[in-house]
Every structure is written in structure tokens, then in C-alpha cells.
Image 1 (spheres, protein in one colour):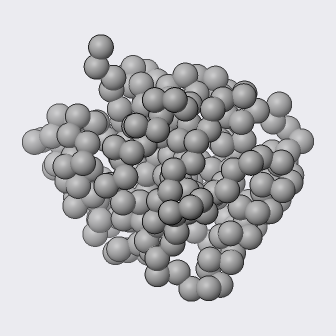
Image 2: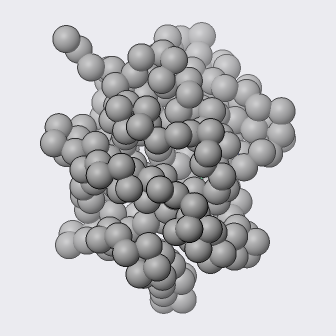
Length: 235
Ligand SMILES: Nc1nc2c(ncn2[C@@H]2O[C@H](COP(=O)(O)OP(=O)(O)O)[C@@H](O)[C@H]2O)c(=O)[nH]1
Ligand SMILES: [Mg+2]
């Protein structure tokens, strides 16, 4: 049987990136489907996707009414994936920080794992074009979460991942409450608590190509506090 994969890309104002990204994903994983979850981006990202859908039957779009956050964008995407019988479900940013070249490696790694994480902090992984301070904040964040939650995972905040459908089925999606960076921590921790097999594969993360970051100090601080909530509430 052929297994079906779906790459979920949440977007908010990614008009400079989305078309080229969709093309590149297709060139590295020709059989995959793509789901863009767009929060009514004022720059018209959704309209670009709609236009591309005319000539690409593997491209799907979930339109939401406004900027509702990364966490709920992914949760809606996961539900869509489960309804449509996809076997392998990717999370990927729209801004080229996540190189589509890596996609086939995730599919190889998931053969003997339930969740594969593209990791900046294992041998062979790394970050390009980040200041020393930005690196320290990111590594410090993963260290903080890893220590409090006692999980043996190096990169807890990255958003380049591949889930086996059974992993998403095992996680109670209704109870996931995190929004920004902590969403990534929470999903990985929930998989870990279910005793699922988690593998990290090295990726080199590059700073976004076009457009602007949507992450804010508020979302960073959310993560600092949420880690404790995750520790005490996720069983
Ligand atoms: N649908 C949706 N996508 C979002 C939202 N916030 C961020 N994104 C997308 O999530 C991905 C990661 O966001 P980004 O701003 O690059 O975060 P950073 O890499 O941590 O600076 C990008 O594809 C964004 O367009 C949101 O509220 N809704
Ligand atoms: Mg980014």
C-alpha cells in the first residue's frame, strides 16, 4: 500500500515565500500533499495558494478568519490530516528556515519512529545567520524545558517535524493549549509521555528568507510559564 504524507504549513503574511516553497516541496517529495493553514493574511497569501490550487490537486487550503495563533492553526491542520487518512504529517514553517531538501530524510527516519524532530542541537545540526544572542536564547529555551520536563530531547522548540498518524491519534488534541514556541514543546512532551519513539535528525536552520517574524516577546514569555503548566497537567 502507498502511504500518504501531508506537509502542513501555517501562514500569516508569507506572500514572498509561499509559491516558491510549494514548488520546492514538490520537487523533493513529488507524492506529498500540502495543506496551507492561512489566517486571512492581509498580504494575500491565501489568494496565491488558491490560484496555485487550480493547477495542483495535491495542494489544500484551510482558511481561518484572522490571526488565531500557531497552535490552533496546527491543531486544525492535524484534524484535517486525520479526517483525510494521511499516514505521515509534517509541520513546516513557510519562511525557508526549514529546508525542503530534508523532507525525504524525515520519511526514512519515521520508518522506526513515531515522531521525527528536525534538530538544530544534535551532531550535524545547526543554525545559520543567527546572532550569538539569538542562539543563546533558543538553546537556553530548549535547555530550560528539557531540564524541567526531564526529557532527553535536544531541540524542543523547533517546528520542523513529522508525526505518524497514530501519534496524533494518541495525543488528545482537544487538550493541547499552547500557542507559540510552547506548542512545539507541548506536542513533543505529550508524545514522550505516551512512550512513543521520538527521533531527532540533524537540520541546519536558516533565518527566514523574506517577510517578518511573527514571534514576539509575549510568545517567548508564554513558553517560559507554560513549561510548568505542561509539567503539572500532561499525564
Ligand atoms: N496560520 C498562522 N500561522 C502563523 C501564525 N503565527 C506564525 N505563523 C506561521 O508560523 C511559521 C513560523 O513563524 P515565524 O514568524 O517564522 O516564527 P519564527 O521563525 O520563530 O520567527 C511561519 O510560517 C508563520 O507564517 C498565526 O497566528 N497563524
Ligand atoms: Mg521563522
